[in-house]
Image: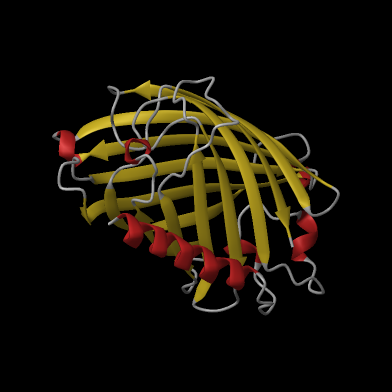
Length: 273
């Protein structure tokens, strides 16, 4: 089983790293997230992003802990418009302070997102995702293979502000269902539905703001609901770069609900290329 997990992780990393350096056709900006404003220019060929984020978390579940995550994304102009690989490195110490110089391997996650015809002029983005129990030690992960499917809808907004032309705002909703499909029989099965509601604003083509509400229904806990709220501020700099700071907290529900935590502070850096 250990060899199988290691092999799957290496295959996933090789495939998506290779994909990041494939130069696809020009991609519509609506199909991507948090791209620099210059990416809308027709002469540009933005096709990937490398992201590094540090999360200090008051632990809620084994997968939601203090960790450093590397995210690799490739954008395509076709039916599949995004491939994403998440490589989490949870700290050996799982409290809020963590131990950043003692990382361990977490559960590797892969996502594929699809481009479909727009609905009433709005971007509709379905996706599928797979999670592999690659955590070492296993206590830092779920111990389960997981499959999920979801859809994200983006609707442009006009904000009631003094200078509306300085803002590019949108409202986003996401629905995702996740189930375990194998793994350690001694670990709890996984079955939950996650919702996400996001208000996003880009101000003066430089500064970003996000306000998120993320309820989750954990069907393995008799449909108990946990809700997390997050506030994020960021900015683009040096044309291809973005930095952000996010603070999150559990707003309702007991500990242990999937996709929830007690408190979180996140610092991130992304390079689009």
